[in-house]
Amino acid sequence: MSSHVHSSRHLSWLLAPAALLASSAALAHSGALGHTHGGSFLAGLLHPLTGLDHLLAMFAIGLWSVRQGPGLRRAMPVLIAIGMLAGAGLAWAGVPLMGVEFGIASSVLLAGILAASLVRLPTLAGGALVSAFILLHGHAHGSELAPGASALFYATGFLIASVSITTGGRLLGSWLARHDQRWLRGLGAAIAGAGGAMLMS
Image (cartoon, rainbow, N blue to C red):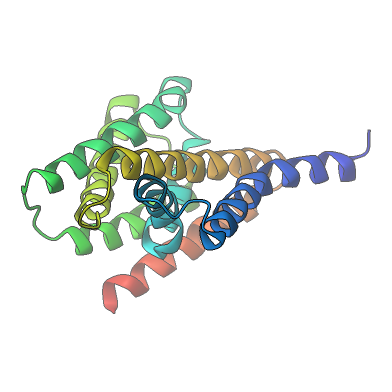
């Protein structure tokens, strides 16, 4: 089978979540998801995708995870889910975190640098770093729960989106690593640049 066919299949898998999200958005506009719980789920699902800082940080973590040990790669979805829930739980409990916005912008910069440098960290150190990043993102997500919305449905939405973004980054990173690591480094550098711009804004 030609490399062109393989590339097309990989791109199809990577674009599938976006197509599903677009379908969900269309349903929401048509009123199929207009009730409270559906609205809460859709809000959670779209929140990580509509915030550039969240999107870039999670995508960069996925790119970077390609170079990590098998233990950390396998644990990444769990770390993302636990970090998001822990951060959101703190927000819902009224526990403030200092410098959340600064920390989120810094996570975009650092995650981009890690992806660009292809650095490999020990499993515990890498896991702790990712958990700290994601805790801040989870707190920001939790803080934006709309009054009267279902926390359960909202959390389910942002967990699905967050894990999907990170997994998409890992799939693309794996493909790029096999074909040309310069593109992998370039994406990481671009994300780091965006994080730097966010810090300066």
